[in-house]
Image (cartoon, rainbow, N blue to C red):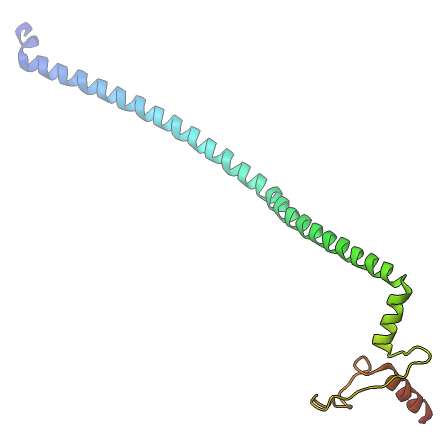
Length: 153
């Protein structure tokens, strides 16, 4: 039996068993390491997902507020531009010559000693009287219409 113990077949069999045991231990260590990495990866994924969920609403609010801020800045710039236009108009209205010119153009005023007249263009399209609104007609037509309406019951 001693001889059997050191025979080549026995040695190969023992060597195979030892190798198989080493491979089994190595595989179980790798699996243990893999399971630790998988647990770590799952925890990391959980942390990342939690951060995404926690930051999604504040980031969305931030982006929408930036849009609102840009819109309000645009409106403020438009209002400032309109204020400047109104200041310019106010300054122009302080000039008596400008006011006189506006009265002549829009109200058809004439200065004392001048003769006012209206020229009809024969090539122009006739304007229908019934479809005109008060803003489209001269002021004196509106005045006479008001006098005529006041006389009716």
